[in-house]
Structures are given as structure tokens and as C-alpha cells.
Length: 164
Image (cartoon, rainbow, N blue to C red; front, top):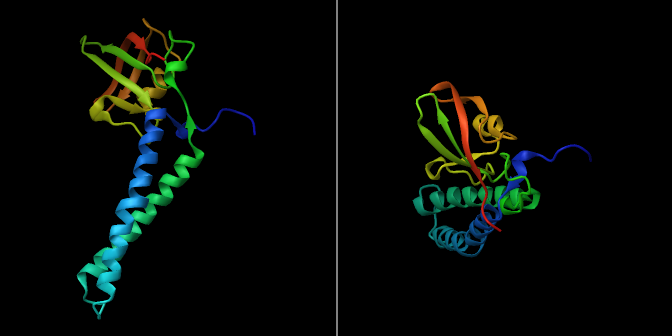
């Protein structure tokens, strides 16, 4: 297989560990409790009007779906260590980038994997339009970002990566 790997598979070591922990929590704690409730409810007779049984089965399907999703994502993940980035003067996966818009409002974002990004923590997915526009850029470069507020001209002020 040649070409660049699928970017949606990139994940930081922290993000991969969080997914593994969630999977173990579901497998070892959450699912067994729900299975026990469903078994107990099934023993109570008529299942058609048994709320514990009906809700438990629904919850079990949701848990199993999440387990399959996490298992697949973990198996296909490409772990990337941002601290190991040799070209720290350019924006790549794992970079924390500060940029200013035309009104000198500064924004700082960290570009990480799609499965771990949380905008409330200032993290954006590698697949987000803003991240794609920033990739490969350097401090001082100007570019246009597509944001919820529209097309915005910005200048990159700072690029940093975690220390090894």
C-alpha cells in the first residue's frame, strides 16, 4: 500500500490511552452490570412490559455498539507522538497554534485526532477545515480560515509542540 496514511486514524498517545481505558471500563464494569440487570429482569416473567428488561437490552445494544467502535478504532489507530515532531517551525499533527484575526483577536488551538478533539479544551480535529488550512504553515504566514462566522484572514503568531 502506498501513499499517505488515512489522517482520520491519527491519534496522540494520550487519546489512544483514553480510548483503551474507556473500552476496559465498558468490558469489565459497565457491561457486566447491565447483563446482570437484564438477567434478573428476564427472570421476572413477562418481558413485553418489563421496563428493566426492555431498557437493559437497549442499553446493552448501545454498549456493544460502542465496544465494537472502540475496538475497531484502536486496532486501526496510528499513534503519533507530537513531542517527536522534528520540524517544529511548521504546523503538523499535535501542534498548538496561536493565530490572530483581522481584529487582533488571538485564538489558540491544538490539532489532534478526530476521536480525541474537544473544542471546549481548544482542541480541533486534524480533519477540521481550520486544521487543514493551518497544516504546513509557519509563523508569520497569513491565510484564510473558514469558520462558523465566515471566511476569516488570520496570521500565525506561534507554533509549539509538547516537550519529549
